[in-house]
Image (tube, rainbow, N blue to C red; front, side, top):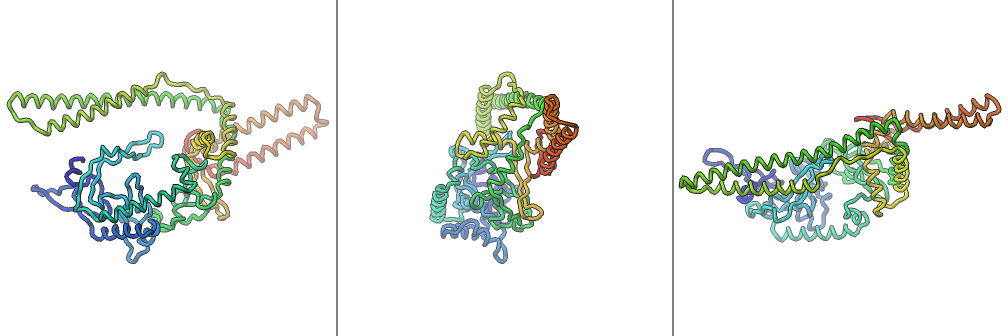
Length: 476
């Protein structure tokens, strides 16, 4: 890959503004990685840069390109999105930040790794010293003056945005509010975010841009919901009694399994690294043997062997560094954690109380927020059937708890136990004059229990995956 970049070849996909250049070697095989300018798309690139310098926003340009006659296809033949134009100046993504347009190919700018918690690939920027840069003037579309003007306007726009209250919180890389980043539109699967004063709405709907998986139509979900109502409904769904005596044993077993699995995962990682190190060592020995044999036989050295040894040594250094880090982090015996239902009940009550009253900019409240957010994977928002209110569907661990029928049975069993104890106490104290008073007391309890059950049914529990503490979903 690095060698290809140094020779002016592209190592990735074909960026907007270019097409594959068909050049063949002496064997008739196409030489991969060659690009040439697509003049039609290049004109769109120049127009975007010029319009941005004139003060137009990426959203305005995306709308105009989509509405033009004939329509102008966007990258990969899809509809234009403002994010495809804007990208990120810091991560150097998007049309306005693609340095190929000024004749510069960059390889190894980012590395991708899988987050073990989310199981999603995440990109991280490499140090600039690790980048492989090649000048390709034949691929230049934008002149340096126009490029510099775009960069200057980006800096000015970011400076203005950084003065807003919302972005001051964003710069800390933590959620602004309890459910920030966890809200999803039921129609287009786009994010819900603060649209106006403390009201959440679908961002795709607000942008008024076509959605590919909706057959290029605009998201129809115009339902908004106040932050106060949203957070109250979600917090109200968290039962104080998450654990019962009956479910404690199964949870304890799951926790013990998870702790043991974490310890084993560390051991597996070390074994994998050791296996990779042994493989590199064998390859180094094999190449060294071939070099020695050639020297003894008076044959000339092969430069490719030296390069292979250099590459293998770099791999060896990286693996050994990873092994040292693994050794430092290597856990001792599996930790233990004892489940205490009363402790959980008290903690959940305290956490929800703080979340209702606190302001998210305080670090203490943030820690409570993070705990509660662990219970919720996402909240999907849709208009209700009558269109008057918002329907919420919660996905995640909390949904599993609430979706469990056993949870309600445990709750009602606890109420009946308390009622039986109180009834027996009153009988012993002679508080009932006759049988009619006893029956009236029992009927009042049944009415209370029926009301509790009605409230539970109102949650419209709908399990879509697992139960208990497995990820699931339910509607509020």
